[in-house]
Amino acid sequence: MDYPLLDIFFTTMWIFLWIMWFFLLFRVFGDLFRDDTLTGWGKAGWTVFVLVLPFLGVFVYLIARGKGMGRREHQQAAEAEQQFRSYIRETAAGAPASANTDHVDELARLADLKSHGDITDDEYRRAKEKVLA
Image 1: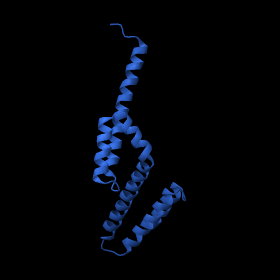
Image 2: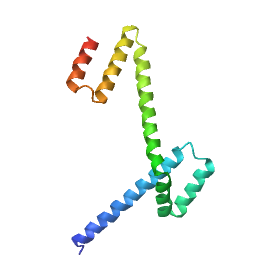
Image 3: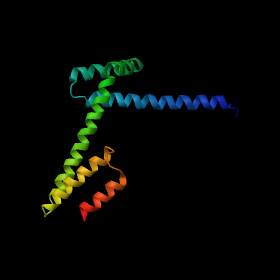
Image 4: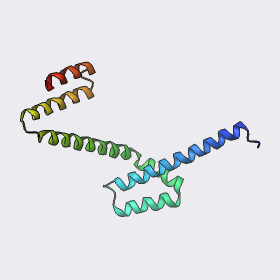
């Protein structure tokens, strides 16, 4: 068996590029079908274009709609975060004492301050202990 090191490198590179291509293709199709602003005909057109001329179709899609891909993904993540926080607040508010809602609001405010870097981890821990005490 004679398989030089350079051939191993090229084989590994081609496999890596092939896997990356599929990631990119799935990403384009995911964005295409997640986009609510595009009509059904538009989605069908892009799908046919990407399936008939895959490389050209994906690259044209990235050039034409690439900026919107990031915005749509960021918007979806922000909506999911908001839904999660809303669910946590509603669940915690279902507790019997009304003081718990004050604690929940205070903890949410502290978590926001910590996530924005306005307070340190140690300050967050001490404030959390005070709220929960």
